[in-house]
Length: 119
Image 1 (spheres, one colour):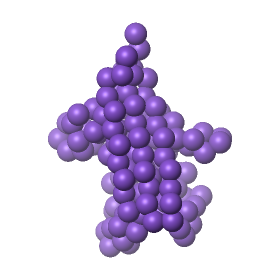
Image 2: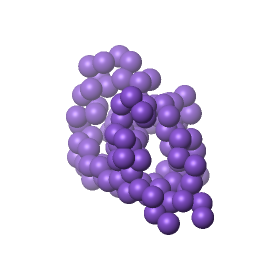
Image 3: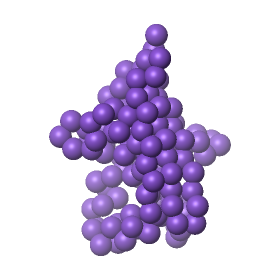
Protein backbone atom coordinates (compact mmCIF):
# COMPACT_ATOMS: atom_id res chain seq x y z
CA UNK A 1 0.00 0.00 0.00
CA UNK A 2 1.34 3.44 -0.92
CA UNK A 3 1.78 5.64 2.15
CA UNK A 4 3.22 8.70 0.43
CA UNK A 5 4.23 10.20 -2.88
CA UNK A 6 6.53 13.18 -3.33
CA UNK A 7 7.67 14.95 -6.49
CA UNK A 8 10.12 17.83 -6.87
CA UNK A 9 11.69 19.86 -9.67
CA UNK A 10 14.85 21.85 -8.94
CA UNK A 11 17.01 24.15 -11.04
CA UNK A 12 20.54 22.73 -11.09
CA UNK A 13 22.13 26.18 -11.37
CA UNK A 14 20.29 27.47 -8.27
CA UNK A 15 21.74 24.65 -6.13
CA UNK A 16 25.22 25.09 -7.67
CA UNK A 17 25.13 28.82 -6.86
CA UNK A 18 24.06 28.11 -3.27
CA UNK A 19 26.96 25.67 -2.89
CA UNK A 20 29.41 28.22 -4.28
CA UNK A 21 28.09 30.95 -1.99
CA UNK A 22 27.89 28.95 1.27
CA UNK A 23 31.00 26.96 2.20
CA UNK A 24 29.11 24.43 4.36
CA UNK A 25 26.22 23.86 1.91
CA UNK A 26 27.42 20.46 0.69
CA UNK A 27 28.04 19.21 4.24
CA UNK A 28 24.62 20.48 5.33
CA UNK A 29 22.79 18.65 2.54
CA UNK A 30 24.82 15.47 1.96
CA UNK A 31 25.54 12.67 4.45
CA UNK A 32 29.15 11.43 4.64
CA UNK A 33 28.28 8.53 2.30
CA UNK A 34 26.75 10.90 -0.23
CA UNK A 35 29.74 13.23 0.09
CA UNK A 36 31.98 10.28 -0.80
CA UNK A 37 30.06 9.71 -4.05
CA UNK A 38 29.92 13.46 -4.74
CA UNK A 39 33.72 13.71 -4.46
CA UNK A 40 34.05 11.53 -7.60
CA UNK A 41 32.25 14.12 -9.76
CA UNK A 42 33.30 17.51 -11.08
CA UNK A 43 31.82 20.35 -13.09
CA UNK A 44 28.24 20.01 -14.29
CA UNK A 45 28.00 16.36 -13.20
CA UNK A 46 28.81 17.38 -9.60
CA UNK A 47 26.13 20.08 -9.78
CA UNK A 48 23.64 17.50 -11.12
CA UNK A 49 24.43 15.11 -8.28
CA UNK A 50 24.08 17.78 -5.59
CA UNK A 51 20.85 19.17 -7.06
CA UNK A 52 19.58 15.62 -7.44
CA UNK A 53 20.16 14.82 -3.77
CA UNK A 54 18.55 18.11 -2.74
CA UNK A 55 15.52 17.33 -4.90
CA UNK A 56 15.30 13.67 -3.81
CA UNK A 57 15.30 14.72 -0.16
CA UNK A 58 12.61 17.32 -0.88
CA UNK A 59 10.55 14.62 -2.61
CA UNK A 60 11.05 12.29 0.35
CA UNK A 61 9.94 15.00 2.79
CA UNK A 62 6.84 15.66 0.68
CA UNK A 63 6.04 11.94 0.63
CA UNK A 64 6.37 11.88 4.43
CA UNK A 65 4.08 14.90 4.64
CA UNK A 66 6.49 16.86 6.83
CA UNK A 67 8.72 18.90 4.57
CA UNK A 68 12.33 19.53 5.56
CA UNK A 69 12.47 21.26 8.93
CA UNK A 70 11.96 20.40 12.58
CA UNK A 71 10.58 16.87 12.00
CA UNK A 72 12.89 15.80 9.17
CA UNK A 73 16.43 16.97 8.38
CA UNK A 74 18.59 16.48 5.29
CA UNK A 75 20.89 14.08 7.15
CA UNK A 76 17.95 11.90 8.22
CA UNK A 77 17.81 10.70 4.61
CA UNK A 78 20.67 9.07 2.70
CA UNK A 79 20.42 8.20 -0.98
CA UNK A 80 23.33 6.34 -2.54
CA UNK A 81 23.58 5.40 -6.21
CA UNK A 82 23.92 1.69 -6.87
CA UNK A 83 26.44 0.29 -9.38
CA UNK A 84 24.08 1.23 -12.24
CA UNK A 85 23.59 4.82 -11.08
CA UNK A 86 20.08 4.29 -9.69
CA UNK A 87 19.34 6.16 -6.45
CA UNK A 88 18.73 3.84 -3.48
CA UNK A 89 17.37 5.20 -0.19
CA UNK A 90 19.73 3.61 2.32
CA UNK A 91 18.71 5.57 5.43
CA UNK A 92 15.44 7.21 6.42
CA UNK A 93 12.97 7.41 9.30
CA UNK A 94 10.36 5.57 7.20
CA UNK A 95 9.99 1.90 8.20
CA UNK A 96 8.50 0.58 4.94
CA UNK A 97 9.91 0.41 1.45
CA UNK A 98 11.07 3.65 -0.17
CA UNK A 99 11.52 4.00 -3.93
CA UNK A 100 13.33 6.88 -5.64
CA UNK A 101 13.72 8.10 -9.20
CA UNK A 102 15.75 11.00 -10.61
CA UNK A 103 15.96 12.51 -14.11
CA UNK A 104 17.98 15.46 -15.42
CA UNK A 105 17.85 17.87 -18.30
CA UNK A 106 20.66 20.34 -18.92
CA UNK A 107 19.08 22.77 -16.44
CA UNK A 108 16.59 20.86 -14.26
CA UNK A 109 16.39 17.81 -12.07
CA UNK A 110 13.06 16.06 -11.45
CA UNK A 111 12.64 13.50 -8.70
CA UNK A 112 9.97 11.25 -7.29
CA UNK A 113 9.80 9.23 -4.08
CA UNK A 114 7.18 6.61 -3.28
CA UNK A 115 6.80 5.33 0.27
CA UNK A 116 5.19 1.91 0.54
CA UNK A 117 4.09 0.03 3.65
CA UNK A 118 5.73 -3.33 4.30
CA UNK A 119 2.38 -5.16 4.41
